[in-house]
Image (cartoon, rainbow, N blue to C red):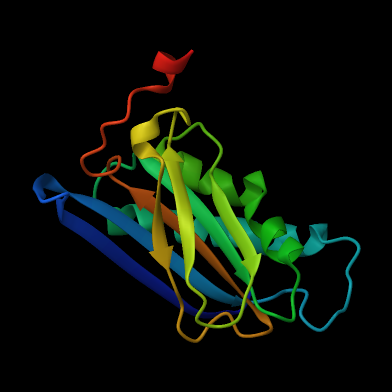
Length: 183
């Protein structure tokens, strides 16, 4: 696995809807810009060897970093794969849609639900939204949210941006009724 760079950022929302958010609502994102392991090979029928080589290492690398950046217990989480223009969406999907990647984050977050994801092919600098959901109950509406991310110089055509995002709470000022009220 060839990593060009890792980007970590946090966001703290102090005011929402003209009202204070106390404590501030924190989200964290960690993005790794890696060389696409299938770059230059044309169509690869069996992605599993590359997935087995790269996905576990990425999960092990990124999961503790995003939890540490958040600095609080994780309540919502999500993942992303943005593939450069010379790759296939399946390249990014293969790396993030495997337990070899996601279980590192599930363990670190003490989570049980599937990680929501965004995956797409895009040029460097593309803005993307990483969806987040509650770590143990995907029907908890207050935790359905997203965080915007962007790598100004990535992914290059032969790269993939792999990301994890975490939130220490649901949306600031969330007030939607629980899903159970609509059944």
